Length: 307
Image 1: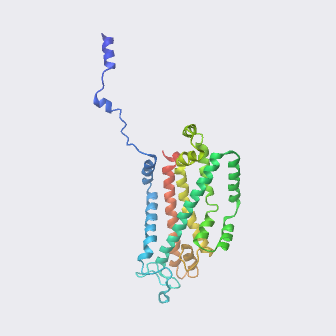
Image 2 (image 1 turned 120 degrees about the vertical axis):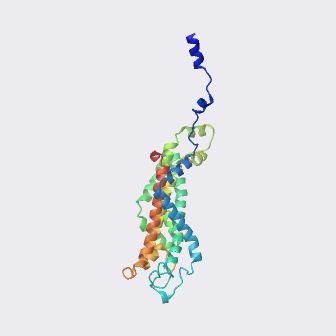
Image 3 (image 1 turned 30 degrees about the vertical axis):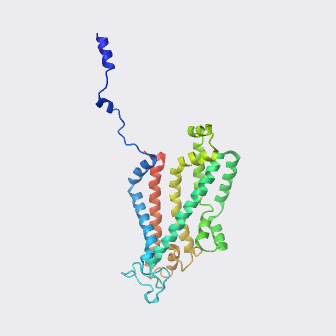
């Protein structure tokens, strides 16, 4: 009898409360939702995101509503200190520095974001093909990368802009010659580590083409690291443009660029320091904000840091 009672006790139906106790109570989430939650926990990353958003809005709409233009000269108000009429003061030709900085933000953000997108496309395609193909193709493609790394960047940028002129197009072309190399090497390493995965073998078994496997499976599974890397390319491109313009081989006056504004402020560095301070702060804050965003994305998207 005791054995029968024990058997009946073991196979007794569970109550509703006991059944629900085994339910998974954690909210279902995706990789990107989980990454966004982790990104929001980083206060510096959020501050950087807000700064860039505000900067974009001011760069787009600021020059439109400003009573001044970036190239309007008024010698009656030249070299004026910051005031209620000219928030950042005026330069040696009476041009409003605040308006010129807003216009320069357009150029800097355009060059930074455009070069990052172009380098993303080139780097992903080049690195993906090299990593997936492997063998001799990979060896030849990576030796080309090694050759490009060995070239002095500043030298060929100067030569290129000497022949093509000092404009946005020539700067973008110069920045896109080798800036994609880091992205290509990262994508190659990711593809090499993923191309022997089970889901790739399953896709091959089902008859999927190499291009489909590469762009539908391998590259999307590497997008976290790719986005993180490209985020750091934007401040590099912004600084490169400002540096070239500061040297006088980038954007040329009267077009307003943060680099040209800093270059114009050299003669009045000690007598009118505000003319150098405001463009320098604009460059520094923008680069710092993008670096904050990049650090936040690294912590949120890198599997090794998703503790």
